[in-house]
Each structure stands twice: as C-alpha cells, then as structure tokens.
Image (cartoon, rainbow over all chains, first blue to last red; front, top):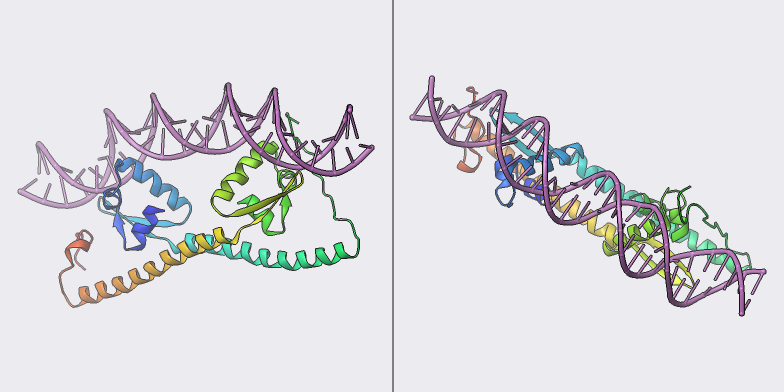
Length: 106
Length: 106
DNA sequence: AAAACACTTAAGTATTCGCTTGACTTTACG
DNA sequence: CGTAAAGTCAAGCGAATACTTAAGTGTTTT
C-alpha cells in the first residue's frame, strides 16, 4: 500500500521507491514484482533505470470488486424483509445445516 | 475474499460459511476473526449460533483508499502534460524529473 | 438427564513469507 | 579502457502464517 501511495504522487525509480523504507533494493523489487502481477503497478526500463507508476487497471479491479459486493449486500436487505414476512406467517426458517469435516480429515 | 463474497449474498452461520471450503470450522473462525478486525464482517451470537454478515464500513475503507489513489494519479497526469509542454518549449527538465531522458536526442 | 450441536480456545506444526546476502548483468561516466 | 551506479537473480534463514487437533463452553433437542 505504501508503495502504491508513493507512486500515486508521481512515477519513481526503484531506488527512489526504496529510499524511505529501511529495506534493501532487492526487497523492494520483490514487492514491486508482486504489485505488477496484480496490475497495481506498471514499469518500463530505460537504460539501467526502471521507472514505475500506478497501473489504474489494478485500482479498477479492486473498486469493481468492492462495488459488486456492496450491490449484493443491498439485495440482501430486500431478502431480509422477505424472510421476516415469511417468519410472521409461521414458516420455519430453512436450516441448511453444514455437516462437512467439522473434525478430522475426510 | 471468498468469505466476503459468500456473505454479500446473504448472512450465514459459521458452519454455513465453512461448508464450501475443505477446512475445519476452527480455521474458518480464525478467518472470520481477522475479517472482523478489518471491519469487513460483523457477527452476533444468538443461542449457540453465530451469524455473520458483511460490514459495509470495511468496504467503505477500501473504496475510499482506492479513490484517493486514483485522484492523485489524476493529478499526476496533469503534471505529465505540463512537463511535456515544457519539453516542447525547449525548457530544461526540473531536477526531480531529470533522471529520465538521457538517451537519444528527441 | 443425556446426547447432539455449534461453536470456542489453546497448543502444536508445517508451510509460506519477507527479507538479506552475495554474485552477476547492463548501462553510464571520466 | 576502468569503475561506479542501478538493477537482477538465486539461495538461504528466521519469523509469521494457516492450518489441524483436541479439549473445553454454553445451548438446544430428545
């Protein structure tokens, strides 16, 4: 998160990213590699310098996921209302009883 | 993520959450505890059953962070445009950005 | 009361992570 | 040229993590 925050203020080289952290350059490189796999950071190398920036595709991925969850949570409230109505009519709640590998291996 | 997705489709007990996973109930409890620390899940116990739902505060936290990053990335583009305009006018690059553009003449 | 249920808690373990070190490659500069 | 800078790669180590097992606790059901 701190690396993405740094990069959201403007592009930076790997050494520049590493500077505020008490870490080796190699460690930073490993973090950036993971962030690139997540499409949160993109980079290109010019000469011996690798410059990194935020990749907005990763941010999109995250915010899309969050908004999807929030939408279905909204529908959940509707379903709760329906459930309470059923309850008032005397219907029993659906007991989807889980019974799978509570202890020990299958 | 899978637990939050499950809960975004409607509340569930711990056993119900555990069902689709090949994990013990204890493992699921540990995951849910972490999610509660992150305010991504909330739960209350009724009798011997603990029912869990999505806590929208956690979702808000995430999407707020993402939109903040995106805003500053936006400002970054403005700065890039300004930088390129300066370049076209033949002005020397500012020292903080001077590390690029060492190679061939434009 | 006894048994079954739905967790809860603690402890142990095996794997995974994060990081460092050190050797190496490539590029820039005098 | 030689040397320094910026980064890459692989190996290794300690610490954290994600599980499991096993023994509780409180609550329904029979």
